[in-house]
Image (cartoon, rainbow, N blue to C red; front, top):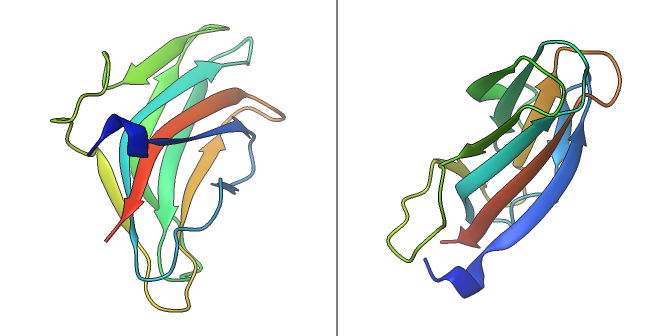
Length: 122
C-alpha cells in the first residue's frame, strides 16, 4: 500500500444501519487500513461497523466499539499509516454486485462520526 493510494470517507452514524461511502468497484476489494470514531451522543453509544458483500441483504459485523462519553474518540490502529501497514478488514465485491462498508449506532439520531481510510484494489 502506498500512502498516495489512500482514499478517505467521512460519515455520520445514526441508529439506522447504513452504507458508508460508495460501493466497492466490481471485481475489486476494499482494504480498510484505519478508522476513527467520535461519539456525538451525550450518553453511552455502541457503534457496529459491518460489511455487506455481493449484494447480500444481511450486514455482517466486523467490529463493535463502545464509546462512553460525549466526544470519546477512538482511532484504530493508533498511529500513522505506513507502506508496511496491514489492512484491518477486507471487503470483497463480485461481478455486477454491490458491496459496502456499513455502520450503525445505538443512540437515536446522529450519534457518531466515522472516518475510514481505505484502498480499492485487486
